[in-house]
Picture: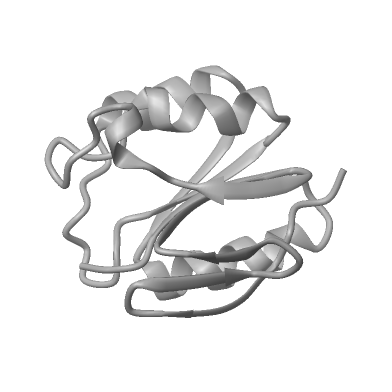
Length: 120
């Protein structure tokens, strides 16, 4: 199952082909949905939680791209990266512009997931 491509992004907006527009988005093989930080209590610090990434893995992502935001304000704890690696997942942690480019590159031929933060 392929992962949907990101067709456009700007401050506060991410457009996913065939799915819609989001502020923050979870992408995975077969789809995408809003990334609601309130579901897991995510904040800029300590950052992306294991619970945020679990859905990507459960939906078949073998590579995960984590966006730190446009300016790098969103943190990514070592615990989250280590958990993903323990699941056999390749992890890329990048600023949003680079994260979108890397995700789209990988989505062409791999089971990839991403957490994209469109601001700060």
